Image (cartoon, rainbow, N blue to C red; front, side, top):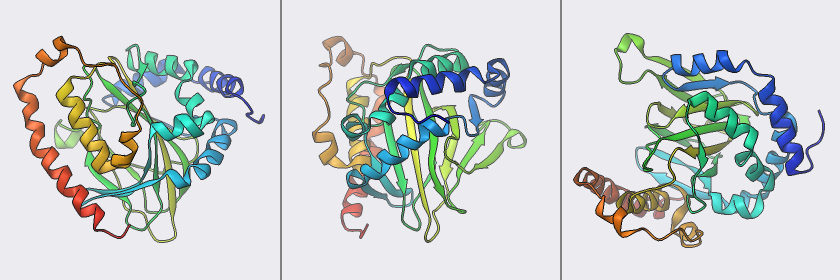
Length: 285
């Protein structure tokens, strides 16, 4: 396998990977599984290798987080990746990958805005008990949000992605899949449809996952933006990371007028996250 030395090399290797897929079969499987698809070792080793080098270089950027009863682990935001991880950034911005995904989900996908720390992020599971409870990757954007998970380091027998396909349908139709995220393995799903979790890491184990987020509409209402920022600060990347986020376009008066009363339901969650942040500061992580 050729050595990847540039953005052009990464793109050419991804083009080759996409062309080797039976796209019609994958498209049917994705929709048969309620917008969920597992692609084992989809990302070529020649693309994974430079990403592995970059996750080691980003080790000092990891923010440890702890939300009682829900999650603990380490995260590196898109802001750090933009500055220090050219291979990972090239993977996220790959035209070949985004075209493949757009055809798979039947929607024109766009990268998230540069001020979204989740646009392209790394999750480090490095201490015993690191995990995340069941959740949806809820879209706060005005359109749909799609999650792509890519395995980079899988040195664990306990830590697994658990995906409950067809969540919300009859119990007999729910299929729970436990997935080892080997290097290059990719999972694609609609964030609002897959009920998923990560089981706790065992002793002397390590796991690192790359997540890519794409959307159908880059706009986000002001109140949902506030909630998203609070969640990111308390549960993922820390307030310091958000202080250095790139500037985004100022919210228009029309956007402010579109805030709906149903969004007020997010307020109790903001209060919970504030309490979680206080707990995490007092926890030895």
